[in-house]
Image: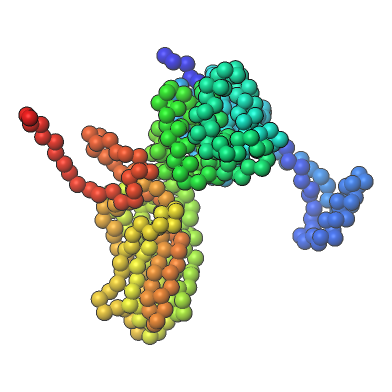
Length: 413
């Protein structure tokens, strides 16, 4: 049996945070400046006392990763994801537990990781390769591919401190991916790049996995995670609470997120004069592509208001219109008194390709035509498929996936 490329046992990371205990409920700028001056001379005149507070960023985390695995790491902000990657990258040391890693590790945790700002892009390629233990001839062999992938050839001899964050990221990822690490660790930093480069990065990480090397990927982009990763782990308040197939872990995570947001799905938003959106819900959320999805829209209108046009607007994360749900009623709808109405409906066999979408509203009434964007977020998960058909990746399938059937017939020439 192949030995795990990463073994983590009982891992924990503790930080001691200094804070000032004070009974003051309100402090002025003068109070803060006075306290700062007092500290400069070694005195504490704020009326409080300095104390250390123990904070565990990670606690009792254990897992194993096999060669060639592509692992997604998910969790809310502050869950411990970045701390875990820093420990795996040996940027910081654990407080307890142990990590055993086999092979060369390349990390991309933040813009400019491993780069020296005073060196040019060309010099930093060789600098990073040396940090990974590569010989100059090995770096020479990969150099052209690195430059071509990054797209920064025209700035190759410019100090990287003059690069934009996007250029920094493109070159840093290209170096990390092309210098053949056994383990590639990538944080949310790819969000800095443009959509085209993000697609190139996902494709490169897929290739790395097929070559038997290991990828650890942290992202809040569930579509990218599902496209790249086969398995996932979830962290919450520094503890590992779920692991398994990427679809199972992501689905459970998104549904917990949705449940925690039920009380604030839509804060009442005015759609012009006299019409207010009070409720907008989609269920289930997240939803599976190809399955029925129910929705509920509640509106409060003033007496005499007449709605002539009404539609839910579905947009992609790039703000492109994916489609509408037409809610016009023949002859319109008139509020005979100031009251609220609720519209319940079903989207049959949701045809959207997996990914993040936002739901808005268009209304037409009394000469007004307001549009409200981003009333609600909707995450669409991959549909359950016939295993005889292998789908193209979501990023090349468009937005809508058409249902249908086909047959293949053999015949002689």
